[in-house]
Image (cartoon, rainbow, N blue to C red; front, side, top):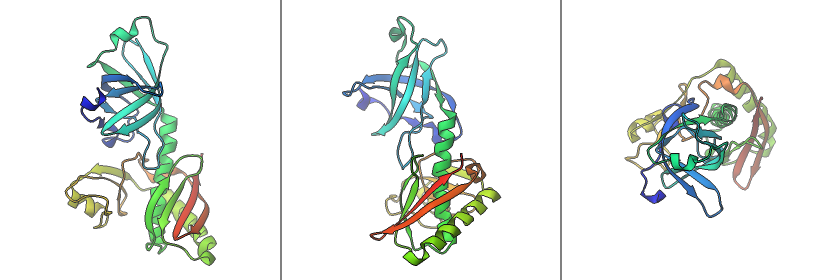
Length: 258
């Protein structure tokens, strides 16, 4: 049945700070691993991807006939699957949960805030790398989970410069955080998106597409589907834990204040 549904509208694209909203219930599936998955027409829950963990929270309705605890969220073939379990349900609730019913979504604010700050810090490091003359390093993947966030670049920093660059990078990052820079994100036509990114888009962005671009103030933006802070001052402070160069790649490990 899931394959017959229209793609889920990613409502967090419109406003990354929205933590409560409504949507239309479409389906509830029981997957092979016994997990339940709720599918809606739209969602403010961020599905895990791009190095950022999924949102958690719950889905309910006005009459509180059910409460679905969202433990994980994934995007598959255009559909967002909210995985979790039903809690504190009343007798006969299943018969009241029907396609087309309006439901209320509540995202865990503390988790969203932490994930957005960690993800934003990764983009901030990209900006600082360029400001320190390390623009020869080509951005690659990032890992913005609380258990050990890092950003990875193709290219190396000479080993005798690693400690110096580590200190410089941390100073530059915290200077930008202290100054405060507004963050915005928009889905744009290819040519406009290219301008937002300083005149160049990564090769994996196909011409004619409409990528979502995240931009920190006047600095060049980059394609990204994740959630971010409204102002980089919200990151508070950043610590560069280590810079490691190996096999033609450079990893910058970082952390943020609580």
